[in-house]
Length: 378
Image (cartoon, rainbow, N blue to C red; front, side, top):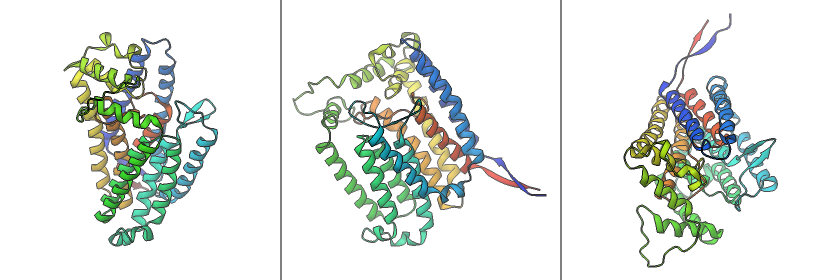
């Protein structure tokens, strides 16, 4: 009789938080769609809701994490091919080319790129642990050249899509993984300096809208008020302005959904980039704090469950996946509150978007898989 392995236990908190976020997201799409001309977005999100639950189940029950690491290189190559395909076949939306239209689906490979890079970094850093003590700035390219090459190619392709925000989220996540793996601090500081210089050049020399977003940020920033007498005179500050109006209207307990005004086309991107502003308006500071607490707790549980594993690969993979969702959420919330400049990032599990929901749900399945304790019978 062959022995079988079954899952004896796993982190139930991660699963509960996931379902709470998913239900809130589905409700918010219904809430926003109900006052607009069509319910089609809610119906589509409803279908993605169940497909995403299937994605969690597959990643949790069926994916072998050791086999997954063995194909990490091929996943990187596959993602690069998709990113190239976007540049060739993708349709331009507001000056950016970010998705592929496959059958009736819009697929954003940049979302997949963030996951595959985390998987690849965890694999390589674990595989080359013996070289970590030798990871000074001049030696890092010698021992970890594959990380530099693959990251540069992916970041370059995503930048050509004019999609800057995934680079910020992924950059912070990957630098954090290097720190957790004990790569020399001097090397990480050099990388941060290079990325900051590169980011400044991208904003300065890149498309005009990036510089304009920085102007708007200086005008409305919660922390950085424009000290110059020169005021922003353009018209592209509408979303930021309405987002702040919605959040301010919510006060402590919110206006309630019946009296919320932001979703009545005052915020055109209410179902995606600025959905947090709708939550803040209708449920106030208390509702906003609850939403942030869910993401913080999810990140905390991802760290706790990952650190219980003996393998550096699983530790880095779990923490990296948790960071990816957490930083994504904080960037979206930060944009809605004018803490950081405006950028096209959705709120995980809450905003409308099939690819995002599916990829983030698969991530949750992997986190559950990492947290699982297995036993053999027979």
